[in-house]
Amino acid sequence: MAPGVTVHRHEVEPEGGGTGGTPRIAVLVSLNFPDLTEPVADLVRRFTGTTLTTLRDLGAGYELYDTSDTGALPDPATVAGLDGLLLLGGGDVDGELYGHTGPVPNSYGVDRKADDYAIAAIRAAERAGRPVFGICRGSQLINVAFGGTLVPDLEDYRLHRGGPGEPMFLDEQVTLLEGTRVAAMAGEHRVTVRSGHHQAVDKPGEGLVVAARADDGTVEGVEHPEKWIVGVQWHPEDPDGSAEHRTRLFTTFLTACRPN
Image 1 (cartoon, rainbow, N blue to C red):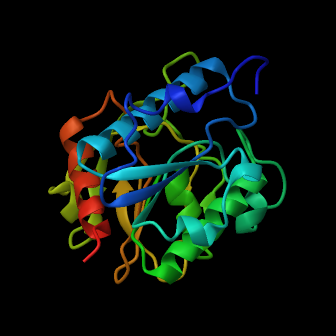
Image 2: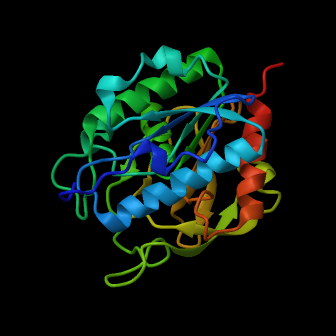
């Protein structure tokens, strides 16, 4: 992290909190990670804050787990004891976890301890039969947890993030594959989403299928056809994106999480 750059919990949690609703969602995000700069810290504040506010406004409760502070985290089984697991974006996943050797171009924010904890939480949630929803880094972690691989660096990034001197996030056209859970969540097969990524799913993990693609063929979503496990590469929690799209995705996730 750059000197003096820190994201505090009070900067992302909505006024009055939001822990009392149902279902109760475990939200995993690294508020602080290596290479964090003030512009990226501001994105963490905005995106995490939008996520937590949306959950509260939809009647859900949440527990926020900061995976950059692994010493303060409970056993992953405790996280899986909540009604659902939501994993947000952040730094790159350590290449060693998906078999990549050698340097990764444009590598950013790698934190192996945070990766290991998140993967353990995903596996614990799967064993417990909890719905799992991953966003950007969260989607990549889901894929790696199931034994899949990632594209370490998208050589042609133009559809997926801004170039040098440009804003990182941009609007991207994504096609949701017919018959997938993601398409049902969004209510349409062609969506404009907010993207800012240089990595993506390569080989889907065991039991996972591709659920969305960009116009250049890049995988933009994965899911498990039988279990409620979904990952999207884009950022529905970007406040500059569609509030309607965000509400649709989060509402469907929360419906799946509600105790019978």
